Length: 193
Image (cartoon, rainbow, N blue to C red; front, top):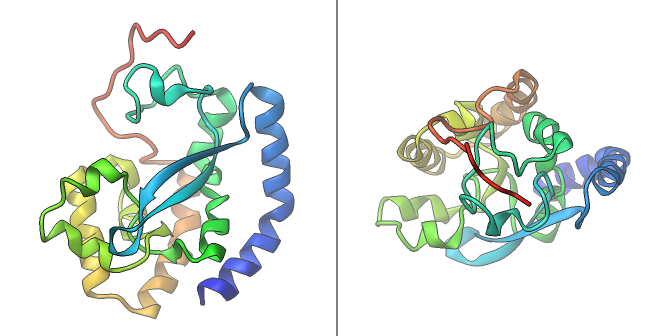
């Protein structure tokens, strides 16, 4: 299913991917894609692809991997890409490569996985997804424990019908543009130059 739907979506989105790639290149210096190591199924690491939404080298400035709505490292185009979820579109390539699924727990960073207990490790039983239950239930407005519990619920009660429901709900959630950033992070005084 991932290869069939993922391949169809990749071809469908290919013109949009090309336009977004050109826009990223023309509006800020640095690479078009942001790559990062993430944890996949069984905790195996892989390289995830995203359109770059922040200034080049942002992970070495300010709060590192943490971000928020007022983060000055995010480019103007990047704000829009994050709001619409288009920054994640290159992950269709991860699906075609077999690293990810269309639906599943979002892939986390290695340092987060190293802190997992036995319960949190349940979410590693399945391939990570471009979208998932936690995304449609609140995105980044959810706390970390809430996201983990939704991911575990997804894994323990997996069904193709639920996957289809999540895929149908995802565009609506992205169009609303809510929950892009978590709460409580401030960025006053950050120098990104």
